[in-house]
Amino acid sequence: MMVLENVSKIYRIGTFGGKRLKAVDDVSFEID
Image 1 (tube, helix red, strand yellow):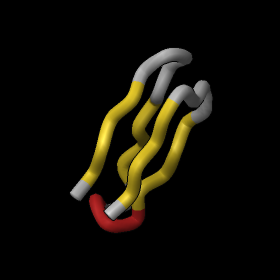
Image 2: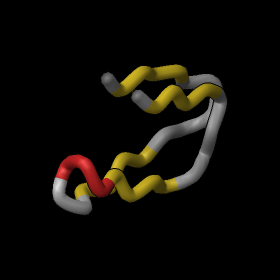
Image 3: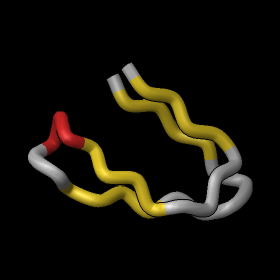
Image 4: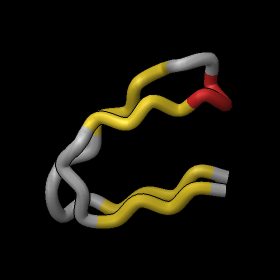
């Protein structure tokens, strides 16, 4: 599980085959 909060970076999630998730400031989301 990965939890990201208040970030403004592009993350590469290997679990999803290298898809990129772009998170903006003041956004919180959780990946199970």
